[in-house]
Amino acid sequence: MTQTLNQSDQLKVSKKLHSIGYWQDKIRKYLDPPSSLNPTVGLFVGGYCLAGLSIWQWYEGNWPLPVLVALAFLALHMEGTVIHDACHNAAHPNRWANQAMGHGAAILLGFSFPVFTRVHLQHHSNVNDPKNDPDHIVSTFGPVWLIAPRFFYHEYFFFQRRLWRKYELLQWGIERGLFISIVIAGIHYDFMNIIYNLWFGPALMVGVTLGIFFDYLPHRPFLSRNKWKNARVYPSRVMNYLIMGQNYHLVHHLWPSIPWFEYKPAYEATKPLLDAKGSPQRMGIFESRNDGLNFIYDVLLGIRSHKKQRSKMRPLAILFPNRNWKKKWIKLLHKTAVIPNSVRD
Image (tube, rainbow, N blue to C red; front, side, top):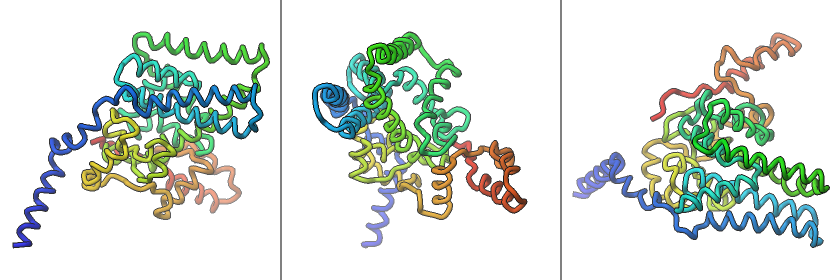
């Protein structure tokens, strides 16, 4: 009798795992627009307050420079989540408020909101596609510690693919014009020290942080285009606060309209489904010898080929002094090549 009941329960669980309607009901409450006063609004306002505090202390206070830099870094780090959620219309239920938050965050970050939005949506449509995923280039075209400068590729991608819509090219011009005007004013009125120390420096650090936790770690080893496996989850309460939910990045890819502060509960609600789909739920850096080798390679060099026999790094073999070292170099290129599968769903 007990065995029959257990089999019946297992059958019910199996049906639930395969029922689209069941999981739609499970996730629906997280898909609703956030309230007008939500944590993302707090990040937006808080980021500007911290930025203002750091500038005020520069002129009027006596706080040490490292503290001011830390405040500026935290301000920009917070705005990074704001611009990300705003591009998915998940920052505020009001369309105009959502846009205002996106543009405001972009200005503080030195970004362009239409560029960020269009390029990021291309990433969602083409995850781990070497030709069409702009973040794939950011993650696999150099060492991890130099990931921040590669974000400039987004601007190139935006214009190369002509991604703008309606007034977005004008918006790009206004935001870039404002950026240049601030720099020119800094040169003319002699406040470039503030720009270097409290804007450019922290922005570079935030670029490394965003690159690692938004692009690199969530998608490595960059091989799967299957929607259940093209990003990963590495559950952690501490990381959830430090990087504002991006350790649940797969949840974001599966349901992009969920705001960052609901990634964790949405993950916990759908974990049985992710388990059944074989979704990666670990950081996956040193879990195997191959994982460790690829991570060390990314830290030191990071330029990955997408064709084993036609690697762009293969000609460098002529720099090695003997045949044995050349073979080891080519073998390393083969091991670190990224050749994503073509299956998306």
